[in-house]
Structures are given as C-alpha cells and as structure tokens.
Image (tube, rainbow, N blue to C red):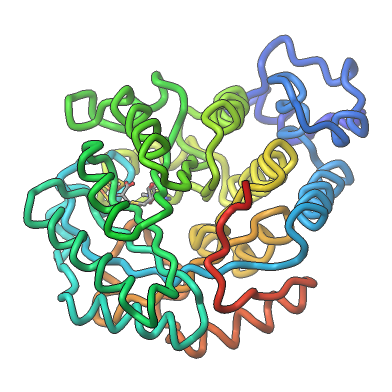
Amino acid sequence: MQVSKYFHDLFLSGRLFLPLQNYDPMTHAFKDILRKQDLDREEIKVLLSAEGTQFQELLQRGREVKFSHLDNYVHLRGLIEFGNVCEKNCLYCGLRSGNARVERYCLSDEEVLSCARLAHELGYGSVAMQSGERSDPAFIERITRLVREIKRIDGGSLGVTLSLGEQTEETYRQWFEAGAHRYLLRIESSSEELYYRIHPRNEKHSFRNRVECLERLKRTGYQTGTGVMVGLPFQTVDHLAADLLFFKRMEVAMVGLGPYIPHPDTPLYRFKDIIPPAKERMDMTLRMIAVTRMMMPGINMVAATANQTLDPQGREKAIAAGANVIMPNLTPEAYRESYFIYPDKACVKDMPDQCKSCLDIRLAAIGHKILYNAWGDVIP
Ligand code: SAM
Ligand code: SF4
C-alpha cells in the first residue's frame, strides 16, 4: 500500500487534512475498496488519502461508475446569478452582509426572463437561479412569479433549479408549486463543530436549521442537492469522510463540491496560510467527487466553477472524475463581477454562445457529450 507523501508531510508539519491517528493503510486493500459501493468511514479515508497511481485509479473508478450508470452525458443548467444582496454573514463568502466593499445588485424581471429565454435558445434544457439569501415577502413573491414565467417559456420546456438558501417549508412549497423542481443547499460542512468555525454562531446561522431545510426540501418533493467546500481551515480527512456519509444518509439527488477559495474581504481569510495549497484542495475535491460517485452512482453531480478557478482544466477534471453537470453562466456581463463570492472566478468574461462551443469542444476532448434540450433529472 502506497502511503501518501503529502499526508506524511502534513502529519509531521501538523497541518490540515490530517488522517486520524488510528488510520492504518496496511489493513486496507485499496483495489478491494475501489470495487465497493457501501463504504465505511475508514475505507472512505483510505480513498481520500490516495496518491500517485492510486489517485489515478480512484478517479478512473469514479468515471467508470458514472459511465455504467449515466453514460457519458453531461447536463447543463444555465446559471442566473439573480442578486447578491444577502441577509447572512457566512465567514467565507464575499457576498456576506458584513462586506461593505461589494456593490449590491438585483436583476430585473426582464433580465431574468431574457436569461431564461437564452438558455432555451441555446438548448440548455434547464436554468438554475442562485442568489444571496433573502426571506422578505417581496423576494419570495417575486421568485414565485419569475419561476411561473420561466415555466411559460415554450410550454414548460425548461427545468428550474433554485439555490436561494434557507427558507420556511411554506416558501419552499410555494416555489415548488410554481414549477421549480430541484434545489441546491450545500450543508457546507456536516460537522456541527466545523460549521460554527465558518459561520457566526447565532439564530441566522443555525446548523440545525440548515439540516432541517434539507429535510423540508425533500418532504416538499424537490430533487434535493447538498455539498461542501473542500480545503476549509480546520477541515480534516475525517470531516470529509463524514460529509460523504452525510450525503448518503440524507439520500440526496444532487451533490455540489468545490474547493474553498479564500476571499480577502472575509473573516476566514486570516487562515489562508493554514489551508492546503491550491493543488491539494483541487486534488482533494476530485477525490471527493470520485468517492461520491462510487457511493451514490445515479445522482447528479455538479462540476463547480470553483474547480476551474483553481485549475484551468478543473471543470473537465471534475467531469472526468465522476461529475455530470455543468452550470454555464448566463448572468448579464454587467453584474458578473459583483457576484464576487471568491476572487478570480473563472468564465466571468465568457459570453454564453462562446461558452457553449467552448464546452462542446472541451468535453468532447475527454470523451463526454452534452445532452441538449433535456432537464437531466435523476432517474429514481
Ligand atoms: N446563498 C445561497 C446559499 O448560501 O446556499 C446560494 C448562493 S452561495 C454564494 C453558493 C455557494 O457558494 C455556497 O453554498 C458556498 O459553498 C459557495 N461559496 C461561498 N463562498 C465561497 C468561497 N470563498 N469559496 C468557495 N465557495 C464558496
Ligand atoms: Fe449569503 Fe450564501 Fe454567501 Fe452565505 S454563502 S453569505 S448565505 S450568499
């Protein structure tokens, strides 16, 4: 069994992504674990520690499992970054309410609808509306109206994913009844202790409520998605293994994983020197993608833009390791730089039509193809 030099070095340096003390690589046969679907915590940790040839074998396994369940198709969700006004103050995110340096915006109805029409014209099959978190009645009503309008385009041919944060069950139901059918709410970390290291500890940032929101979404009937950031300060391999078991336990239909990218105008930035280097955050994200695919073969998994931000080939690498969804950005150019979650966001300048042909070529080069004009839901 090849023992990771990286973990060895980290162990000596006391840095992050530390394996647990009772981790014994000799007791696990890597190839046997690779063939399994029901993985326990120790087995997951072995996979998340893979380096060199084993790292490549793991990514290949993620791809094989995906091909055998979902073929080589990639689904698109045209991303509409609806607004950057946020009531919350997450310690890692540039849109946090405490960041006075961000210029706030909200798209007009017409801007949202023209993005949706463009998604339809380009054959994307689905849109995803994402924004800072707001729960005021005007916002809730507006989203309801906009979802209804989007569903009127070509007789309801567009699928609608929402990613608008924590809401009441009534709000989730209202949006579902208007026509939204998928919802993405990352848990960010399934460890309550780590969650409160990256969020303020108050009523607006309650770990319990976040978990409860995922339950509400599932009860309401959404294809529910969750996920975490990889490479957070204080995050260990044990946390990440627990995250994967959380996804499985919650029986989610979608997972979105991406590397954490420090934002200079956020409180978490001061820990930027204790997180793993960009390449390690990227590689760990790829391991997480491959293991998620092994554990949950039929789900939808997003190749997050953050992957491409850390590595120009990051999105393709995520697809090649087991992800099957890409969210090309449809937000009007004038607003893109204000949706400043983290620095150097990839594709900020790409125009939708360029993006489409670029994606076709990039995906064909790694043996994948886009399934146009389809919602791309998970088949139960
Ligand atoms: N407000 C909604 C929410 O939080 O669910 C949706 C928008 S929020 C910007 C979307 C995702 O961005 C979050 O779930 C978080 O994982 C990710 N994000 C925020 N700051 C980040 C950072 N510095 N690096 C990487 N991802 C980040
Ligand atoms: Fe707001 Fe979402 Fe950013 Fe948290 S992650 S500050 S809820 S936009």
